[in-house]
Amino acid sequence: MAKSDEDWRRELTPAQYEVLRRHGTERAGTSPLNGEHRKGRFLCAGCGTALFASDAKYESGSGWPSFHSPLPEAVETSVDRKFFMTRTEVHCRACGGHLGHVFDDGPEPTGLRYCMNGVAMKFEPSAD
Image (tube, one colour):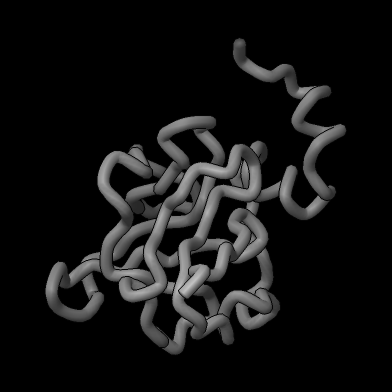
């Protein structure tokens, strides 16, 4: 069953709601996940779906947590034409929450930069 807008408002913080459900963007450099370097997984803050492995994270210098690739079947993309430009928007495949955008200026092995809003994710450290 899909959640109503009111359900999302109750379950998410105002910042999470703004990004995940209203396609907002957090201010660059504000996410604690920028400095997260432990081994583990980054999960959707809306539904808990595993999105990125820690070994795909890198320091892009953009001010947002960046990854070269998502976990298989974790995300979907769509065209974003807001602000007089065309970008590729990234969503959680399970709940449709807005995560950020993907650009083609990333490192190997993919050449992609998944530039994600930290507020849209939670970190789950590995047990080992």
